[in-house]
Image (cartoon, rainbow, N blue to C red):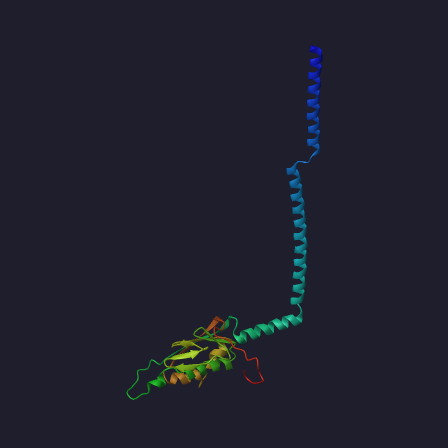
Amino acid sequence: MKVKGYLWGIALVAVVFGFMLAMQLKADTVEDPSLESTNRLAEQIEQRQKDVQELQEKVDNMRLALEEAANQPELRTIQRQLSTASIMAGVTPVTGPGIEVVLNDSNVVLQPGQNPNLYVLHDEDVLKVLNELKAAGAEALALNDQRMIATSEIRCTGPTILTNGNKRLAAPFVITAIGDPDTLYNALFMKGGVAEQLKFWGIQVSAKKMKEVVIPSYGGAISYDLNVGGERS
């Protein structure tokens, strides 16, 4: 009986050991889940890198095509025309050499019976200076930091000047103009010119040539007539 029990014990141990060995072999054949996840992530990263490289190549090709198009003579001409039109329309700020003109009322002590209106600046005085500068080749103009364009009005409203719709400006008036400084200056101060006429009444006129003048963009409202050549709507 003792021998028979001993054999059963050995058999049980053998069965348990065989079961454990089978489980170990099975575990060795199953891939570690963390390793599988890492491999899948590595594949995704590699694919994303390929996608980014393809997109970068497309961007580079498009940039080259754009540079080639920008170098076409026709496009450069259009760009210059657009730049000129933007300056004339006043929609972009501009800088360049020019002059700064300061106008102020007369400081002459009036005698009894003299008309004080003759010794203060009026809208037509400012307009004369602006027109003289335009005629002398001014490319851009501003009055007290208000950009002057083709539709800018200069109207007298009491002691102030109204321009660009609703901008009220008071003396002293500072006019900045971009253009050849010598030409602009000489146009104003030539013998018998507008500056001499204003000084006759004691109006203070001064100007200085500048290497760089900054003129802001137009700040008023711009309206468009889409019925040019036809009836107004």
